[in-house]
Image (cartoon, rainbow, N blue to C red; front, top):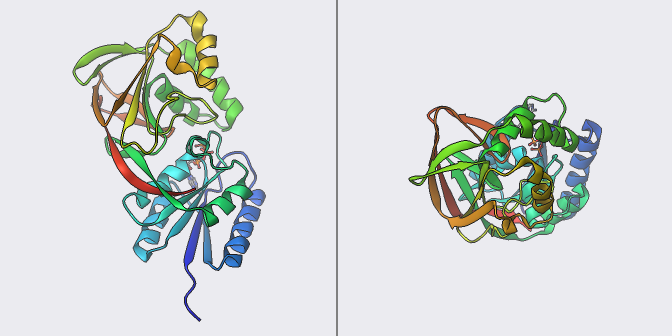
Length: 292
Ligand SMILES: Nc1ncnc2c1ncn2[C@@H]1O[C@H](COP(=O)(O)OP(=O)(O)OP(=O)(O)O)[C@@H](O)[C@H]1O
């Protein structure tokens, strides 16, 4: 009998708010469905940060054609970064708190449907980005959103309601930052480099971002009066933030941002600090295959 093609799934046992039992059932469903479709499936629970990247790199070396990341945007980022510029395609099964990449791509948010999509879908080419050496597939950013990512990472409980409470408290504590962006000085509330159009939870910072145009959307949000926060939040979720006078977007392939002192950033929601305050952002056009 000919060798069956392998298909792999990596599951983050800590992602999102569903229980380990539910994740174990998802794993079993994946194994059954993949076998029924004629694959030789393997599923692994990730054991530590970075593990998904190691497992995905090994899958590329083995020539595996499909790898499923079952987790939040962090797990998807860790898996996808090893698949860049390879023939191995990423299946996304979103069980995180934001699921920005899955939402942008129209991948079902019901895990069983997402598993079907990943097993039956066709590979489609998308771009990715890098901020310094950190890859991102959804968004990377500075300013308020990076500040929130840093505070959120310290919370004992994850999930949407913790995120909303964190963002609300952070809004009153945060002060806009001065940047030099490609030689131009600007004071901004936030600065986003968007590959996908949203952060997650349908918060559309870059409503017109195209994930396969070989470019990133550089979105600048200028400081605004506190009484407009509600309107801007409404626009964010209504996909109309680009109509606000405080928002400005431009399509870029790279950018250099300099700020004073250590710079807080995020890449797909993961909080990071750049000690020298310098961020170099670039797009990697057509660098990832996603199963859609
Ligand atoms: N076994 C593990 N123990 C500790 N950390 C892990 C383990 N497996 C993966 N991780 C780390 O958990 C991080 C967060 O996971 P992930 O993004 O999937 O979930 P989440 O934070 O709940 O979702 P979201 O990003 O949507 O909020 C990953 O970036 C990864 O580094």
